[in-house]
Amino acid sequence: MTPSTAVDDGLVARLAQHRALGHAPRHEHEWLVAHGHLHRYLAGEVATPKGEQSTHMLILFAGHVVIRGDRGAGGHKIFEWKPGDVGGAMPYSRGASPPADAVAEEDSDVLMVAKESFPEMIRECPVVTTALVHITIDRARTFTTSSLHDEKLVSLGRLAAGLAHELNNPASAAVRSSKLLLSSLNDAEQASRILASAHLSEAQFAAIDRAREMCETSAAAAPRTPIERADREDALTDWLVDHSATQEYAIPLADTGVTPNALDLLAQNVQGDALEAALGWISACCTVRVLAGEIERASVRIHELVGAVKGFSYMDHAPSAEPVDIRQGISDTLKMLGAKTRAKSVSVALELPDDLPRAQGVGVELNQVWMNLIDNALDAAPNGGHVAVIASRELDRVVVRVVDDGAGMTPEVKQHVFEPFFTTKEVGKGTGLGLDTAKRLLHRHDGEIDVESAPGRTVFEVRLPIAR
Image (cartoon, rainbow, N blue to C red; front, side, top):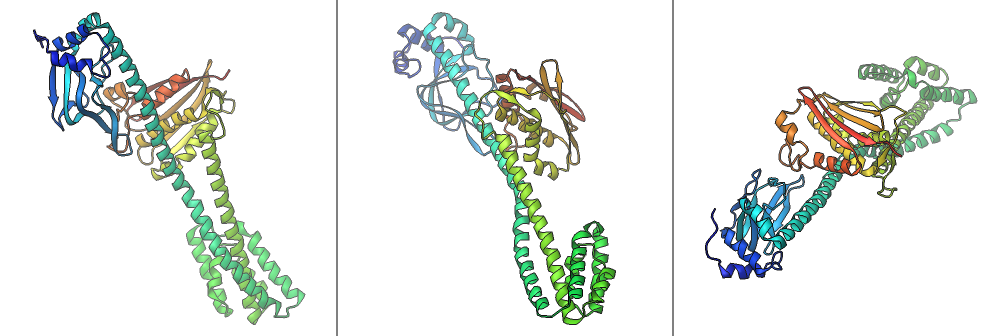
């Protein structure tokens, strides 16, 4: 493009009113007008297509240009330029391509200056150049803050979804068992009243106690497979029919080690209505103990998950660098991803030596790194695949390797894998920020990250300084 020979005083006047560049002297405004041209983008027109580097600097006088993208939670604004802003190509900028189309959302008037003119602009327009450098720095800072915030929100969403799934099973088990427990306690109380009014001898009560104790102490003899349980239940049902007792007692008794031969010992001492009441009391007591055990296991699981969340989020720690137990952070992260691991039937192997030294860093930020790397490994691994997390000490560094047996990366993908917004996942399933965020977080920790990939094996390697 050749600069116009006559300077448009109207454009010079508009530049003097421009919020970002208006403070520059008039001769610099005249240079911009002489080396640029006024262009109008109509509403809906693409100013810079996704993946293509901008060829011009865009000085907005009117309108609104926006880059929208999907960072995993629906489309929203990533960047925007309004009247008084400068966008597009900038001097001293690396000239990265936009992560999505830059679109004029309303008719927009811009002064376009080609990149080819930048060397001369740097010499002739020092005030403008200084302002543009500050704009570039501010834009990079805004992008970094925004992308870190978005990635934290996406990670929080993944964490919440996984935690909800993990908590649902034990919580549902506890609720279900507690409801059944109340019913079983009522049955036990009713059977106790009947036994109390039956005027049984001490020998008969002793026989009932022996049968109940057999329920409690013979768990090792309980059926181990569904087929064994079905056979035990059928045998107990036949015994109950032969002794004119309620057949439903066979259901709870089949989960214990009680056999028809054991019940024969009870029937030798207790008969009739007393036998019916004794069987009801024994089955209710066995059910109560089973349900109490289920509630205990569910509660322990919930307690473990809450502890894992507390450890993962470092909710009781200030966000400052300190010696961090890498082993605990990785273990807590895997607990958060347990639902996803089971959904894909992926086996996860941990090789975390007990004498692994602590790393120097901010625990919650390092856990975000592990979350991104392990989550990506689970995505890459096939159903029924394998993921390994291996940690070791190498000189003055803690080295963590996350390995998966997925399809691997092509050289082209590997070249761009740490770039922001680059993703090979489907729309809405990947933000393209996870690895970029991990790299920037590790950079803040004086750490490093690298990747090696081949079909069937991809390794992300993280190196962190050992805690002082």
